[in-house]
Length: 333
Image (tube, rainbow, N blue to C red; front, side, top):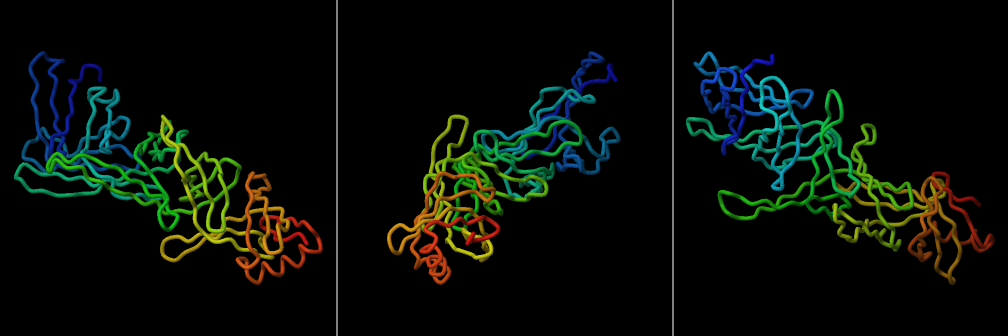
């Protein structure tokens, strides 16, 4: 209602909610309370503060808060309050937290707290949504909302390709307690795919469109990898990005790039190509995407690297002089 007294919300150093009545309606100075409890999110990703039981009859069991999520420069979760109920619009609630884990549909935070008796605890706060890349190739978590557009939590730190072709995000934050810088890392479990000349995909969950769609330049294809250049950030910093794996020929599928992942798993990127001899023992492939689009990249492979299948393919190529490999179908003999 329009005449309801407004309440200002804050968060203290122990991640406890502070409620302070403004007194604007009655003209009398309002109260200020520090409330023991924990933050949680409901099924619609609204932030709710669950309050421990109190003898004070005026204290509710929970406080529901509405606003927009973001991350501050230290990767703490921030809720900027909107004009809703009796909360004061524009208040920024900073939950001091650590990025804990990334699933294809979830981002979780580790939150520490301490109650009025000095008892400490750590709990997990979860947000649901999907992962995507923004126009600057930064990793972004899009928080799902019941109505309207979701909130984008942009990870503005550095990310790289790990030893098992996984995306690893690292960030550094300053600890107020120890006065030291702490570096944390998050690993995204997915797989790579290529569909266009200047784009590559890192797929976490294709069914819910949890996919990093990255704009890149393919520099070259080598016998052990695909090498790209990528610009990351609002003021782009260009860096090298290398996917490692092994090239194989398959009579049913065509030219495959087999990539190892964590846990001994491997997956293939399938390419189309035109192929010619270059010398007696070297095959030259002009790569195409699985949709048949030219990738402006050439790959030279020794027949010996391709082993038995390479020898068989070379015999046919000697007669035809040029062969087409159709992705998903195999050799066009």
